[in-house]
Length: 279
Image (cartoon, rainbow, N blue to C red):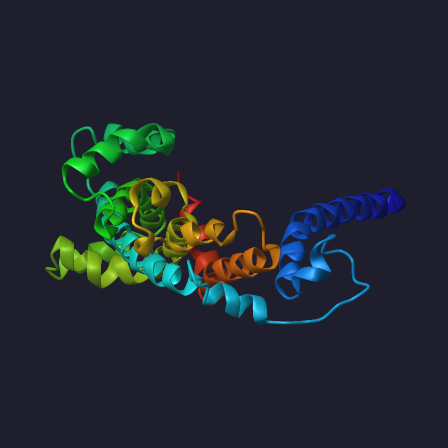
């Protein structure tokens, strides 16, 4: 029995390591291609007969003559930060309302919010395009921020509501006995206790908005307003594909969500564990 248990553990760990290797292999390819000259990766990044480390690809992508990634970074931050803050504020308020207050059709409203996730965002692209065009918000950051915020509010509501349900209500009842209003209880007690959930949602929402290409491609039309994800494929030439520049730009693009996740890792794990307890 002991031998079978050891074989089982070895098999499971071997499969897990194999899956992990297959998962990380493309990332390794992009990383190695980004730090080597184009001549060394033309036949494949896995050839290491000649290996010359260089950061020139990053500088070229950052200061590209036509579509510099640095401009795309600034534009992406302009969109991603408000698109994270707005759903977080509104979702915290609505999530707390669903978690603590009883009102007619509450469960049906919440079910509608949950079902909203089943709607593919591609199916609303054309109606939203016409709405933005009519309201003169097409090709503006405000319009794109509103689109991302509207799409993030239902998830924020579900996320925060489930976390608020894990907070013992006794804290709030004690504050009510002292004469605190519902809003004061929310921002003095419930909100500080929900910081891990807020950090978790912020990381998820920011990563989603930062990595988005579909909405940006449809609703941002002026080249000077392009986001980082729009600038990235434009580094490709008409007759030549600079894989070194594309790889370097991809690494730069991936680095921002990675840095944010590392900074908020502790809160992210606590928030994810908390909100998943209640359904």
